[in-house]
Amino acid sequence: MDLNKVEDDLNIKRKSRNIWLALSLGLFIVIVFLVTIAKLSDGNLIEGFDHTLRPSLLKE
Amino acid sequence: MIRSTNNIYINSIEPSAFDYIELLKIKVMRLAIFTAGVAMIIAPMPLNPFIALGSIVCIALGAGASGALNMWWDSDIDSVMKRTLTRPIPSGKITSDQALSFGIFLSVFSVIFLALFANFLSALLLAITISFYIFIYTMFLKRTTPYNIVIGGAAGAFPPMIGWAVSTNTIGIESILLFLLIFLWTPPHFWSLCLITKNDYSATKVPMLTETHGVEATKLQIFIYSIILSIPSILISFSSIGGLIYLISSIFLNVIFIFNAYLLMINSKNSKKYPFVVEKRLFLYSIFYLFVTFLLLLVEHFSKFFLPSYLVMIEDLLWI
Image (cartoon, rainbow over all chains, first blue to last red; front, side):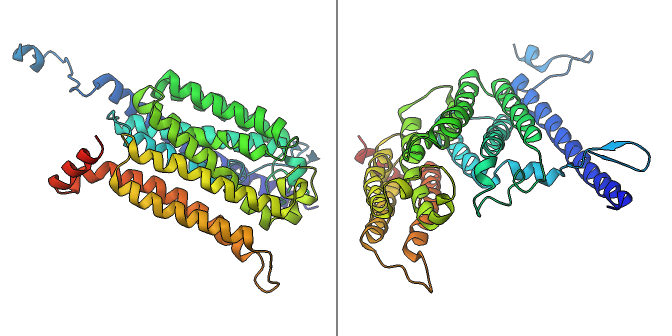
């Protein structure tokens, strides 16, 4: 058995696994972010309070 | 384990990502995703698309976890059957321990995140689905009774219930009817496959109906189940997710299903040139049947948006 060939094959498989794992984690992060936005907004606008007036308060 | 040139021990079984993906039984996962997705859409409560996306991913992973754990437990059977010889564990691409760890991780992950993305009821239903499939069907029923697929088919029938629960946080009569539809569809679907792969199963110790009761008894059971299947299928027409379009189409679909099952029952010849023609036709039709039935539910759901208003009014009047 050519050990160098075996090691190359193993490295290729590990690289493929790592790429898929990275993509899966990235997708998961995106999904969690989107769901968090959805749950926090609950259908309403999310307002940033960066020393500005809140439109919802003005309406009241 | 083998020792490399720089004295590092290498695990000789290093699966690639595709080997892990193969563990998930993508074909079965597709059914779960499709039926759960349709149930989410046709449910009366509006659902945020991002929550729907996250929930679908969790349901898919839960279905995949069930597949991985099933392959882990059934690796001894899989290594004997021609149909399953190329699966990751019998072919040596993945070890049993790797498959077990992967399956457990995905199960826990999918249930926890479905609870966080959607609600506890849908997560509980997903947990029940996975547990039922593994502990009741795979570990117990499959090797014990020829009616394993009748009861075990419940696992495949849960996804639309989960999808409905994601949207509504309830179990309604509609989701129960969808459950019954797939529950009663599974035996004729699976037994028609068994008729085609009968010789494969004879090599295992799995008590399939074709082995324990014979081909003629199996064909009769398929015919009986195709008749019983039409009951929830047509009853859905009279629920809040059904309607006239679904009713008419469903009647046609069920008549054709029963007719094909009848032809299978009376057919005793098997051509050497074209073996299992009737069996294959029924098997393929059963896939078509389920796909079109759920598609019709979607059409019925969206028909109110594109049908002329007078037709919608007529439909509402008929359904009082």
